[in-house]
Image (cartoon, rainbow, N blue to C red; front, side, top):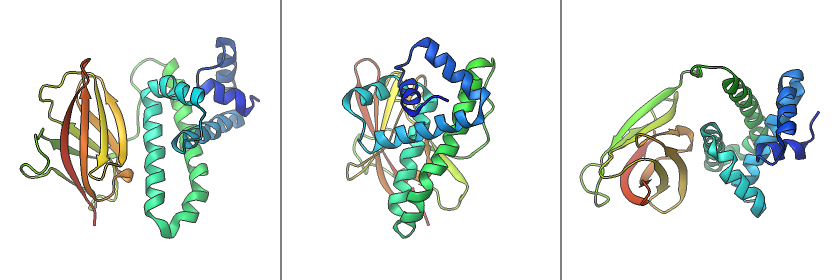
Length: 231
């Protein structure tokens, strides 16, 4: 079975083609190999979010691992779980104990889905999730007009917020930085054709947010205001 160091190198794109193919064959040969990959990937995400990756590994993570959309979604989910753990202090010990196991289980299933998607034609069949869509117009000044508001409380089952930003003069591709009005980064993502972004609802606490849309080759920035309400 591949050791942890080899799996981490594989995730960072540092293995040879032969080593990568051997590791991928192991996914299907032994169930415990897939479990091990999921656990190592969970540790890699945690190390990145905690700032524990050394410079070269951090650069490889950002340029190689995060170039795949599914990997960016996993990072967003891991970040959301960390944020949720920080806000629920009365359950913090249980969350910190459970997080590596839960993240590993989620990532094991995600890795298997990605491996099959790379080998099978057609669209991936993703499980349905409860999604709330919020249209956000472009504003020149925060507070101008009524702030677009996402009511996440009623739907305990709301898993994602689809943020659809008014395009204005922005041209693709797009990068979105979502932060609190105090300046804390909450989520970051990319879109190729339309400025629409799916954000894990678990990472959005009640409050006001600023969305910064960077677009096109000139890296112009447009800002939007939105609000999240919870019961």
